[in-house]
Image (tube, rainbow, N blue to C red; front, side):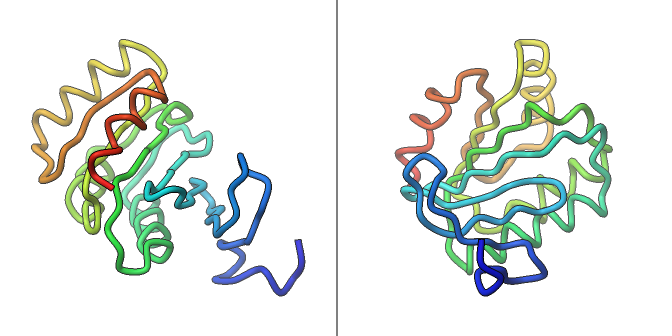
Length: 145
């Protein structure tokens, strides 16, 4: 990577080797994000517990990447162990800005049940579903591009 390709405090880099992808990737402290074929991909890094401060940083980086454009979001939660209630609430409310739909990818059925319960109680303003299969998650998002 060339130094001239680094922007926004080393968070955004240009790459060309992620599954024939050529564009901008935000490689932040807590997650890696990029936009491909009309979907914003969001993959959390290994984190034991997300707090409100972390959630604010994550949303800020995502909104910089989106540049005032709304997208359906594919969010890979498999590396997350826990999230504090304040962080979950922040992500569900303030973090919903510029989101047309959300597909959450979790590791197993246990995580799916817990995540579905949270979605039911938080009532997001956009279509939201939980998956254990990446292909099905991406198929769900197609109609919201």
